[in-house]
Image (cartoon, rainbow, N blue to C red; front, side, top):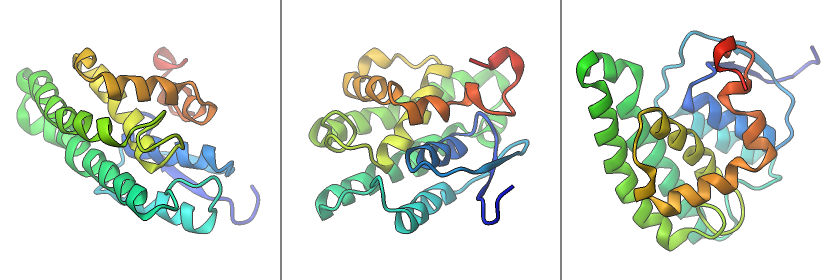
Length: 189
């Protein structure tokens, strides 16, 4: 192990860990993964991504243009702070086994209704224009959660199109939960 090599405490299926793995892959940062059972996160992954942006500014994950940068942060916060926490394991346990699927579908759909409208005015090839940004790092894991909870994604054509474009990129492929060291064998790609 080289000195100063970053360590990511990660859970293969964690949206929070996945966002950081994408950022590390995009910035070609070699890191060590230490699997943990579950990461409980209150938004720290966005702080980690911003730290990576400040210390390793290429490729940019926050646009230079202040209006676009604000849009990236708004979309990132909507997903990481408004949609994703409502289907965390701790919340789903409180909801109860028999109501989990309906709860997750309702909360994701509610968030995606708002997100779809926002993206219709900000999107190019990706969430904000034609460059991958922090917002895209948040989108892909959330779409995967929506798929896991059987949300009808045909209702969200902008979200679906952006997600498809992002999943074609190497950084999103290598960071995918199905390719992590702690992924159970039956879920590996």
